[in-house]
Length: 407
Image (cartoon, rainbow, N blue to C red; front, side):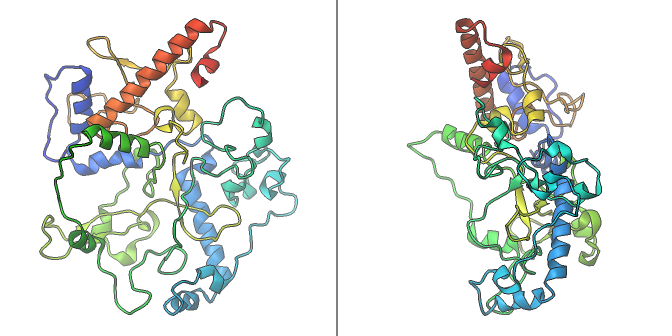
């Protein structure tokens, strides 16, 4: 919370106070925002934010090179507002592997991703979503994959972690493929700033419900964190990008590590801000799925299914980091009263309980420590998993750790 400079040193290490600490220790809102940059480390480095963004920009260059009439096509949307940009510019040729490329690149079902050498020329040009997921291998598997690939055998990437978010309506980029909207399509003139729209449309209200408790909101957030997380550009590993420069560097110089800047301008007389600019980065770009229009997509770092990924994780790396690998149990930390708590995040600074740094717990979703009510739900489900695992162990002594964990 802004304005909290240091955490009280005399606070007990009990569960409730630990939850409060996890929500109040950051000194600045920008520090609290870091958890939205902490994407899950990918099981395959080809699905890292950096590589997916690189592939997207290769696709973008291919699209622009193949469609010299793109600018004219975008302009035509003013008179054809319901037209699809690709209806005008045509379909860009699909990726074609060079002769002799591994079959995994060419997309043949009998090939395994292992045939692709990471760092090879073909690998550097590959859209990772063309990798064969070999769903047939798991067709008789008793349990689903943690990243949700092959939940749908015919569409292996549908709802899987680290894939493009689906749209409810067509994209309306300024240039048709990537640039954010800044002007009207139907009439001339610039669009109002995002902040101006927020001030005009939203107002602060307080409505006390007589039907629902605060738990309803918390459970709603808990469920939301099972479904979506769209990380900021350059947000790999929770490292904050130098976004402040989006407000201090001229727009013409927004290149390289500033090319995703989309600073929010603040109009004079704003009711809350005295500053004239809010630094802002766009969501990290990812390439299109094979067969889709080659425009900018935003990534869902999580599985799109209600599958308790906020408890267990959406990648093998995160899931394994949360397991004890004994009797199907999840890792815990212990409070002064001996109660089970969420394990502490291994990346916490050494002095996070006594200094100005932020302490966080570890769970399937990185936002578990956003606020105390949310953390309490994570704690409840952690305890429930371990409680059931112990009961199952008592009834099925022959079951190994994997069976107990999965069931």
